[in-house]
Length: 178
Image (cartoon, rainbow, N blue to C red; front, side, top):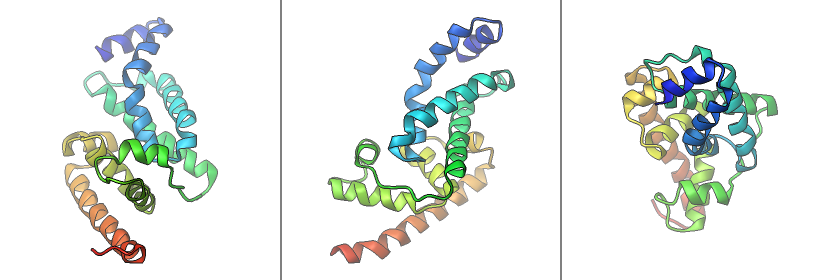
């Protein structure tokens, strides 16, 4: 269905793009929320859709439109951070509450998880977002990130180890045991 809508847009029915936005808006916002500050989510998601519209002619119908769009959203996040400089990601309860609820029972735990994820490198945060929060398969994640499946597995494993180290370094300070 997405490929047919893309063809309509490319044939001049620009209003049809709204259908793609409505269909994929939640997914794009979730990807952006996991890779930026919540205050920036609407702006970056909008930038991602504008970039997708402008690049629509580069979409290849044999691949997943969603994967193509998620790749653009991740690029929009990276562009946004580059434009802002290397400012630290601030923990935001609104984002962490929705996306980290399965990981943590209390607001403090969600805040800690969000902070720890912000300490990861961009690629590690992206792979963790796709695999663990958005339930992408290794194959789908590889397609979105333009990586091999082996690299996805390795980066996922390394990101898990880094996250564990980060949390172990903080938990004792908060009166918890590992």
